[in-house]
Image 1 (cartoon, rainbow, N blue to C red):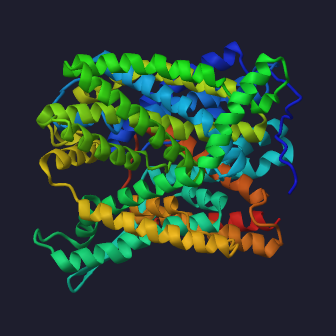
Image 2: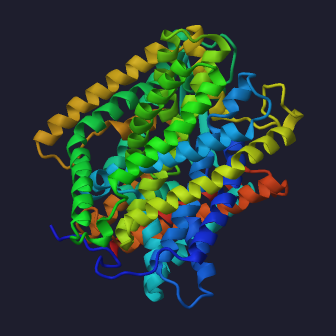
Image 3: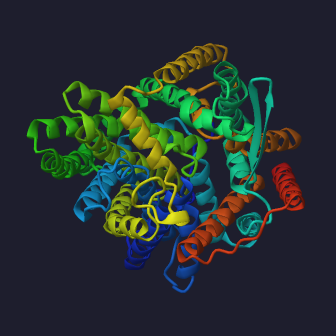
Length: 627
């Protein structure tokens, strides 16, 4: 196999730490973090900021003579931390409002947990970088797309054309969908006797692009997870339990999935995550050893390739200790118990690394935008709640303590997935890893400074639906926070869906056995657990366009005779579609926050146009892939 060579070779050194990159990265981290905090509480999801930040950075730095691709990469590294941190914060802290523990948040609690928890996630990934990016060679679809955007922008000319066209098409598609020309998701459900049958698909250019970049194997597995949940588990559950509330077929399907079947995905993630760590123990241990060896070589004056320089492990360990101590003191202050605070800090460290490893792995499979950080957090919630309950905590005190630990793990996992995506981009363009790692922490710290004010502003202006803070019809749904609150209550009140978790774990074990058999047969097709677990946990509608994108790439490669997985103009086009949709998504997030987002009523004709437009984009990617 040909040795990998980054765009900027290790022997060449370009300015990465610059004043303009630092200022621009910090400003964008704050803006992206604030916008995504609202979007996450409103819609339960955030928009990846890496590609928008890279594009904005390129546009601004065009005004300077002394600009370069690695400087652009540093800006997107810092900026994307704001978006990732917002996800970690809004998925957990509002659960304390749902539980009636807070009505507004103390600034110091949110800031300390967000800044230090997020930074821990960046630090945890340092020993994983080589394992996941260099040795496992996970696809990192959004990281790859971001690298393609940066490289095409640096080259200019014909190299940038597929990305430019893709960006324009992706932006147009997202714009028309956002103003309501067609629905974001087309879905239908029907009762067949006591069974409920459902099918749906998101109309998303970014999702078909993710499928195109990751390829057919992973795309199929994500869809398979959705098929298990929606085509098998939901109909069986509906047939058994009926419809006592008299819900419509569509509402019944969603209710069963969100309150019951989704927990199968959590069970599969637990087993899949543990198995992933077991399988990757070799690369991880080698990564730690090589980090120590590199530190010794540096001390001895030996040269280490610039593109292989991570933050020295002695610095990493010192920073982890320095970040854990304030959180231990915070827990002791909240619970008035040094012993319980020590237990919480230990749980946080162990589960934080575990969750960060899984998030970093999943970002490599489905991308940062589709990374199920909330699922990883629920998994951590379960373990934390069970341990704290066993140690004697109960009632509101136990639930609040669980959420505060989970908030650290969630922010760590969110930043870990984002960091690994950014490091994958850096690996392709030839960045210096240790410099990216420092910028990720800087972006996290500055974004953390505005999280509490933004949360409190949203609660005061809109409130959270179903709580005393709600301000009428404008109250924010905060779906992920409600899920966290209900899981925590379920453990402490004994009402959790353990049966579904066990079924998910059993599915994961079956997939592991099949995957090991396929590995021994040297099969190109494999069945790793985590993509299937993600498919079970996320709506089926996300898996359908991902599958279509994977099929388009497979057919294009087969028609062109190109070796599977090789880069092509199709990958550049897919990167452009992701960039266009992401930039437009950020724009509309700002309009929503400002209260001026336009809206028109969707029609059947509009929905047909949306489907045809999406199919045309698939055909365009297929045509590019054949070139």
